[in-house]
Image (cartoon, rainbow, N blue to C red; front, side, top):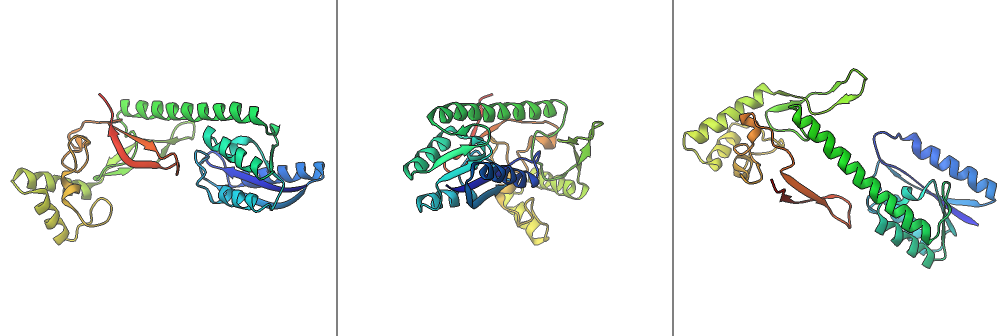
Length: 262
């Protein structure tokens, strides 16, 4: 029996050695079963919410080429946490005459696909809710809910328990002076385009380190973007204004956002 091994880790709570541990345990299992390991596929620090991963894509290509008879992995959620993706992988491997075997579930059948896929989907939903709750708590405590604004620096610190503290920031005096300048110039009647042109002439880098543009100055008042429409500069913390949806094909967050209802 020709066996391929697949291993993945994704979060910062795991470690690089997690890949080695998964592969080692799978190799030990293959030895006990009398299987011959012919290939090892890995994905490092990549989410299991999509299949746009180099390791799993290579595995699927080699499966179609008939390079092995069985896929061995630690658990089904190593392959994917998305119910639709798990079902798709299972169907394609089965069509190629290849079985999936995991250390925790054994040989995978349709029942595992439905049950494990549902549990993984619930895990991702629960993880999202916990993340939202944590961000909400930070905002209520006067901290940043995520990201950073021009004129501020992120402050990295540890709690009394030695865990990273998130959401702290301090004023960047040099950038804050530019923010003051922008508001003063706008109040004096200058347009965002004129202000951006002036800053660029002075060789002052923009928030992204590149040149200033009128949209960087003005932004969108509904979305609270741009220097002039960022309510943080008047001491008002606004969070959860926009919603970003993951692209189901890539697993990445779409740049297209919608405004959440108040």
